[in-house]
Image (spheres, rainbow, N blue to C red):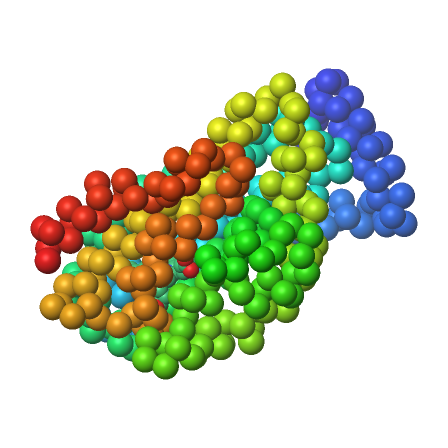
Length: 328
Ligand code: HEM
């Protein structure tokens, strides 16, 4: 027979009382739940983190060993995207503005982005180009271009009109209708066929699956995306300078550093031949992926004109330019 000492007995009685109140409030029987505890198994690490299921999700389409790295790293990236969206949504749905929490969560977001930027070498240096050039042919017309979460991060980060293609940037503003803006969203340009100028299958499938979702998210966060929140609640905060710095870091990490780390992998694998290889999505990637072409800037109001004019340029010279010369 188990005998508890007096302080344990006191604690057990206290917990039982609290549990009785909790279960009673929802019309449940505490004794039945206590009996359930008798039969329930202890939690294990592998069940909690669903490791067995997680490890069934990597299914390359070919037998080239390096395709596993390609699948794994896409999934790792999507998990980080999920972590970023998790933080963004908490800020967007927060009932009361809270300056330290806004700053703290922006800090988490930029930290995740730094991990993604640094770890992109897993792609750039971690696969054999000869294998990549073969297994990629089995993946058409799929492309990371079709990442729903990447687009969702963009939409939650800024006013929808900041995602317009260059030639439409001045025609709309934060108040414009989201469907009108969506017609000219910048990413369409990255998924038009080189030869005909028509939408690629990659884009058609992507739009069929997600356009409705993008439109409803964009409408939902029209006044609550991160920049709208900043303007409404934090532009006069005592933490303003730090918040602005985090927003700018996030902007540069995603729209310059990540894009260029990613572009570096496209150069590494697709620009090895005398003629650059077409991407699996069939796009004009060389005129699309470098940030200096699309010039997507989440927070243009926070950058100087000189910084915007140089968007993405120095990084290209310092990194991609050297790599192309070395391998080309
Ligand atoms: C060897 C590795 C990679 C290569 C060569 C590559 C190549 C490309 C190319 C050429 C495009 C342009 C669209 C197309 O024609 O398909 C693209 C778009 C994209 N890829 Fe990758 N990619 C790689 C890895 C990744 C990874 C690991 C992710 C992580 C999710 C990713 C996410 C994206 C995204 C989000 C876009 C759209 C970018 C934008 O619209 O600005 N890619 N990729």
